[in-house]
Image (tube, rainbow over all chains, first blue to last red):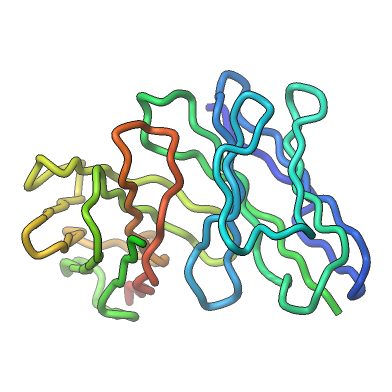
Length: 114
Length: 113
């Protein structure tokens, strides 16, 4: 069964460094999302992406964040200058169409900022 | 904004018993979904109920929705050790399927063998 994959599974970085989290959504899906979950807290929406553009972004998704779909299969989340509070589990998700409501989530990347 | 709050926050039951988790939200919704998250893993979709539905079944899962009370419940019958996980409700407010999900705080379910 097709699944969303994410790499790396765990990323440790120093404060101020740039990180890129990678996702490969399910191949025929059209809508892509990033969510994050700080340890012990809710899963929070960051950004949605369709047709090579951001559809919606949350207040969390400030200028330090960017997303890209560079090659038609990968979907990346970049954090330009990481802060301690960016430590969280980051989930990528995809959705096949506007008529489908279920989102398919990847296993997540645990980001630890020291 | 929509906000889901689950209760209880944590639930421990004996294997074979039924587990009931509740979710409340604040604004009108189009759909409500339940997801499961095993420890340290991604979210797995369990079941979706539309705003015009009151009850839905899938295997050992039963979901109810009361839009007048802005609440939903997830019942897992005949629980198994493998059901140990966190369960989240998620809402969307759009008529289209591409909108963001707003997740609740989750219920941590532990099944005692």
